Structure formats: C-alpha cells, structure tokens
Length: 368
Image (tube, rainbow, N blue to C red):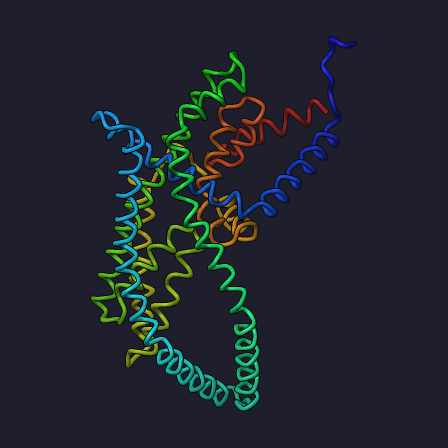
C-alpha cells in the first residue's frame, strides 16, 4: 500500500488548486509593496546582465562593472525624463484652457442635440454640473491618497537600484541555490528553463523599448503633420501606453482627439487623428511587433487582456506593465514541465484544427 501512488479525485485536485491559487493572489496583494520593486528589479537585472558581462570581459572588477551599468542606465532614464518633464509641464500649463474649451464645445453639442431630439437641455446641463461637482469633491478627497501613493512610489524608485545591484552581484549565488534546491536529477532542466527565461525577457523588453521609440517617432510625426499642438508629449505618451497590450492603444488615442477637438476649427481633425493612429497601429501589429518584439513565447489575446486587467486590480499600474513578462515566464515554465504542459498550451496561441477536435470528441463518445 505504501508503494502505491496516491490518486486524488478530480474535484479534490481542483479544490486544492483553487485554494492555493487564491492564497497566492492574497499574498501577492498583501505584500505588493515588497514584491513589486523586487519583480521590477529582477526583470531589469536580467536585461542589464549582458552589459555587466561586457564590462567584466574587459577585465573590470564586477562591482565597478555593475556600478557603471547602473550609472549609464540612470543617465539615459534621466535624459528621457527631462525631455518628458519639459513637454509635460508645457502641456499642464495649458490644461485648464483645454478643459474650458472642451466644456464649451460639449455644452454646445448638448444644446444642439437637445434641440434636434426636442429635449430640455437644462436638465442635461444640470446633470453634468452635478457630476462635475461630485468629481471635484472626489478628486479633492483623493489628493491625500495620491500623495501617499507618490511617496510610496519614490521609496520604490530608491529601492530598485539597490535591489538591481544586489541581484546582479549575487547572481552566481542565486543560480547555484536554485540548482541545489531542485536536486541533481533536475539541474539540467532547471538550467535550461532559467536560460530560456533570461533570453525571452531580454529579447522582449529590448524589443519593447525599440517598439516604443519607433511608435513615439511615428505618433509625433503624424501629429506634427496634422498640426496638432503638444505633438511631442502626446506622441511619447501614446507610445508608452501602447506598451500595455490592447487597452493602452485605445486610451492613447483619446487625448490627442480631445486636443484636436478644442484647438482646431473643424472636428474633422479628430477623425484624422483616429485614421493616423489606426494606420500606425497596423504598421506596429504587422511589421514592428512580429520582427522586433516577437519572442519565443506566444500568448493568446484572451489571456493577454485578462492578465493585464488582473494586474491592474492586483498591483495597479505597475501590475499592468509587469503582467505580460510574468505571464511569459509562467507559460515558459508550463511548456517545460510535463504535468503543466496543458496549461502552457491553454495560454498559447496555437489553434488546433476543428477536424482534430471532432475526432477527439468522437473517440470520447465511443469510450463512454
């Protein structure tokens, strides 16, 4: 009896899985202030690892090599942040005027629509005024909360360089610990999985950065051609939002449309913005993503959207950015571990043929 394998009923396995999954989500949510900077640091450390190795091959001390890599990264981010901040402050100075113009345009549209449908425009304006008042009260109450969030974000930003340094310095120790933990029988498989994860993350994030740069150039060029104000900040913002799969692209087009509506003499410019962004999105989906961002791990659209929304609920905006790399790691592990391969197939985008599904279904019916 002791030599026999214990076989649990299916419903028991499902129950154990659900309880474990819910417990994992609870831990991830409760400890998010600890987990988020570590995950960010781990992913960035994987990306920066080849740069550190480059300096080490030049016979530079490992500590100095890591320090140089972090300093270069800091200066690149600081330069980009300075450009973004200068454009954002120019845009924020004009924001009240844009809101005022948009409100005037909205009121005029409501009046025209009410006249066309023979409705009382006063009731609609009262409802909008009430909604604006509630929004202002909510925003005022949220200011303190926002300051707390910004304070936490500053702490995280200060922690991330420290974590990256430690992960890069202790990388040999971490890898050796993982191999010893799994035992000698699985060391080669674990080494293969770790290598694949490093390769996928490096290719994905570097490709993502190149894609964001190309998208920013195309978005900005399109807005400049159309004569839309604040083209640079709107183009960069759209490129950053595009990093969030499926959802970011939809949100990114709304702001330049609003600017076009309130700064141009005709609403046709808002339509031109949609057309321009749609063409750019087609170029991105058909040429940039397949050849630059595409990794060895393919995730289907359904789970991509689900995991982005779940990441937002679980960890907020950082969760939306981390969701895809983490899902790619999960799928990679599922593809390499035999009992988890069905889950890896479920997350992938390989569609089985309808004929094959029908054959399996017929065999199942005959067996039953």
